Amino acid sequence: VQEIEFSQGTYQVQVIDGKQEAWAFLQLDERGQVKDSFCSCEEGEEMRPCVHVAAAYLRIFNDQNLPLHKRFENSLWNQ
Image (cartoon, rainbow, N blue to C red; front, top):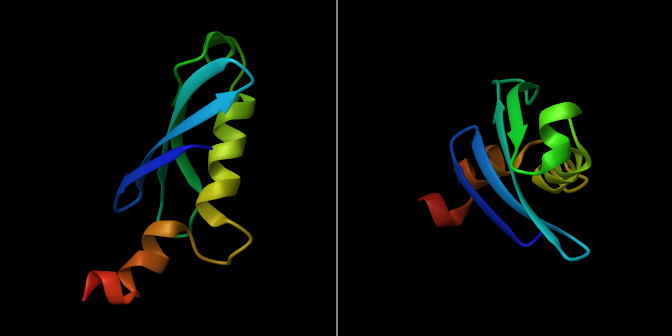
């Protein structure tokens, strides 16, 4: 995972898989569950969710209980 852009529960995540670059898009609900997702890769059209969406989801939580946007809401950066 290279870049993460988010606004509240909507995420756009750049995932580099070897030489392939893909953008995974996820929308999370208030409980952190995926409401909607898609990916720019070819597999993303056929297989939902693809590995890029899975990698993005894991990075959004990063071994924490709350997703990134919820942690940001409570951080000093958002004061």
